[in-house]
Image (tube, rainbow over all chains, first blue to last red; front, side, top):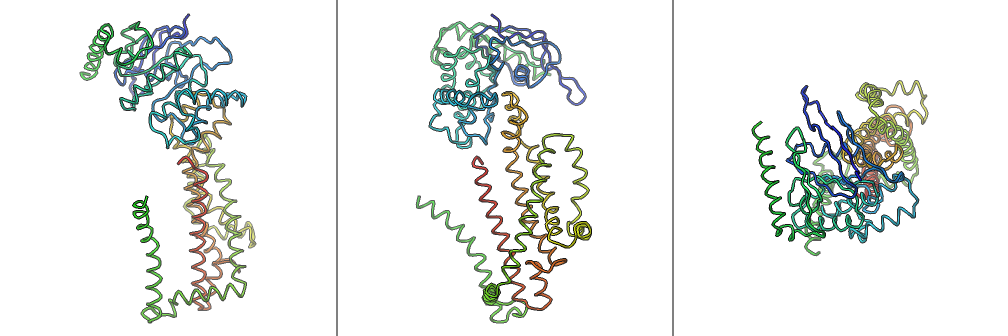
Length: 257
Length: 254
């Protein structure tokens, strides 16, 4: 069953009296429960695509349809890049934010917040403010907030880009653990091939500006995965090199322009 | 722990020592007539004068009157300033409407408007409060608007993505997000309120700390005049400490 349908989507910006084509003719379908990584060079418009799905921006042409199975659920929730955690709310209030905004019953909000605080290991830190947290802990808050909101689909905009290697591995595995439990449809933006290989069922490779989908790769490796397994699997290495080459040529193209 | 105590206490020691040093210098210069003691009475003399004035009773009356004017006038200015500032920060039509009005009135010193205020509101207590209210209004309104405008865009996106309605947006995002800059404006307003009340009392009042200073200067009772100056300095410091404490309570997340 298709969960997200994007048809003939394009986006143009006006910048200094010139049109800039950020996205061009994007058509794709994402299945229910799929974990899809959107991979591309920086400035290729992947964040723009995600923001359109998040209803934070409007497409210039084309349509986006998110299939709603439960009228009570919100369509989508986003895990922002760093700093998406609201500094004047405590960890607990941040996780509960989406639920509070939907004015659900207090008991329900409490129970769900509790559950996801536990899931990301932040129960002890519930009363702290974000300034007292490390970068990794802040992103845990952001992830818990999105999952607690229980949306139809989850959108993630390079949530681990600002973290150091070690923390990144830990958070990736934690994310997978939570995801495996809920089986939400996820669209995840990254520029790291390793991250995409570890996390996704499917990798969509985007070209440099104007952003188009130029490659659609299914990742069939069994779950649960770990970074060691991904690194040592010959099939995955082949996919890595393939994508690497393609990305290289995309990046070079932008240099030449 | 011990080391930390040491490194922290040295700057503190220096901070405390500088006013003491100044007072000592003043005392010595005045006692030995290096400064003319008629114009610069020794701090100890000022202190005894302060105690005498406090004992005779009418000092407290002046303080009470000035503080009432400041506090009520301050509230009269700050409350509408916050409301208008928030509206200006949140809605661009409000901003476009109010900013020329603020630009026109802000450069006029409130004291220069005192005659108009007296015509409009009479010579009673209310006109003094209005004078303070007007002088406090501008920095607070401008800072509040700037505070809202400077909220990081990402929090607006978060609010929108999680479907915050207008009321929740106001109370969970706009108000707390603008608070730090708003409080800076209120600090500034507090200092201006003190300046304004003293000057206003010098010009058009028969009571208050400003009046005390001016009358004693005219009567050439300089130690008494200095008492007034010290009171202002004290209250200025006291209010800013009070607001600082208030700020810490309101912004635990900073």
